[in-house]
Image (cartoon, rainbow, N blue to C red; front, side):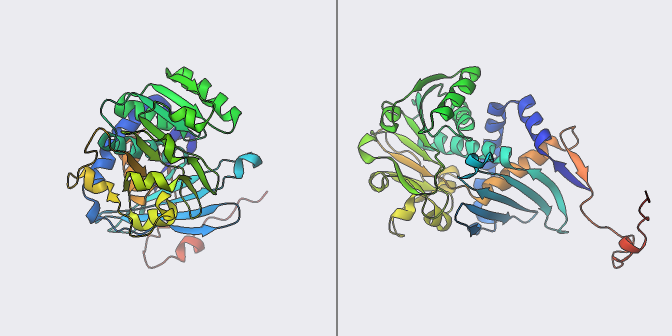
Length: 344
């Protein structure tokens, strides 16, 4: 039998444990895996692009476990009454090849993205940061706000979205979560006076969400919205001015903000910062950018986290996903010995 965590179970678990608490606990798993980064098999995710979006497979493995996530990104979906991003993931045993857990990952991806942002901000944002600007108030925004509050204590938010309804939604949710929210009139207004800026827009275009002239010394930019070829958010001038940190350069150069720069433009591996090999923030005036596109090791950490937390609890069910005949060489017996269907 394979452990199974469906949407209902995942949502109950998050509600019962508290999203902000879970994000903080997941950061510890991410940091543990980033410190052993070189032990993982690594490959840029495998995409299938269409006019409306992309479907991607994100695999990785260490010596004991194999994990993958199936995920889509279709910005047109909300106009159809559908989610922009949906996902599920599998964690398997490397020794036997047997799957151990199948889990929904639409909610879990939001949790791990916020945790990855929080981990990066701990190393890259100024310790005295107080104000968080959110450019884009869609599906990721509340998770990002909670992650930054947990990591840096950022309770003051400045928000902007081209969709007023999305800002209405965020303000309702943020008020219930205890945030202080300033509803900005533009992206430039939102980042004015901010210490940490998160861009999380969804349009599949090279858009300039932030121009270089609005970036102030000492800012940390958390660019999480760009995750496909032809999809960027930042003015290239910002990257030329900042120190840019990435998860996995070969994937980020295809999908991230740095796709607008020469391939040899210098970037810094975030895992080397987490591991203590390289410094993160080195001065109060330094502008830092986390060019995050999401990498398979992040999902591996999240799946491992869920497995450890929900195994043996009411949040985990079991499904019969593996055909197991009494004689391992007689797969046919699973069919020939199957009970006859009950006739109506």
